[in-house]
Length: 370
Ligand code: SF4
Ligand code: SF4
Image (cartoon, rainbow, N blue to C red):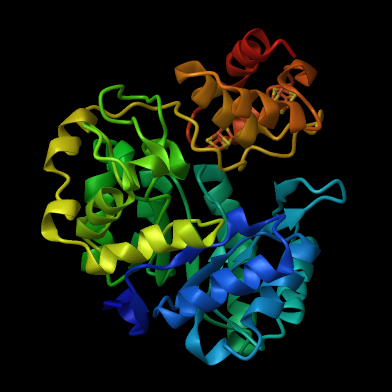
């Protein structure tokens, strides 16, 4: 592993870190094998934002006896409904309760980073500074957190947070698709000059960069198969990681992995040849920023119809490029379908990537017939 300083925290973190959201729903033995292998190979930065009790129990069990080997980021404001849907809360009591539950279920005295979770709107930023920040500072004083971070998706609010001097760590999406996002390059430079540790989330844009079919058609063409085949015009995980880790200020990239082969694909970066890391043929396709592309993160939940919006959008993107029996079967497995959308619009307001969800649901109904 190669280590970089996490900004002014002074903590050394591996350049390949780990997001954990795709572990949700896997059996405990998969949590254990994936987390153990990651740590064995020197991964020490692990982000844990899901608040679902069984998810927390499983990740807690997988981390048992390994606390001294990892830097853990826990989130303040991430919550889970009884029906299993994620939601974001700013209610002080609920926020505090979920954080204490996090420490209890992971059997930890403290998180290394307490993340003010998912802050994108200016009004929301003010609210968070008034309330969640105070909770974070209280936990910090009590020894239940070491450093304060913020997860965000938009340059304006993220820049404000950095300039405030309050956050030590910023978690922000850094991948090809955001290369030309207005304000992003300035934001990254500011992290560097202000000593804010930058944790790059979504290095594969939620997997979109590795799919067949694409936003930028020429190069989004392969998926994990690109690891095995010598196809022209494909983007590999190594190129994605190489791009992300080359961006100013980035301390670690945290791909979400859901099995050992995805973990191996990320770890392969550490031994990849320079030719594999070369992304010069790819970057030209991202000279223009395209807003409104779904990265399947489900930050737009809850949905009153309990639609798994992220997975529905992922299957729609895949099917629009090339429908297959496998995609159809995965769609069939969904408990609720795009046709259940009542067009309430609440997801559209919550999506940090400006995705116009309702027309997409209509496209999915047309394509999948439900
Ligand atoms: S619509 Fe937006 S919030 Fe919802 S899954 Fe897609 S990118 Fe994430
Ligand atoms: S607009 Fe449709 S998909 Fe979005 S939250 Fe409302 S019902 Fe769910």
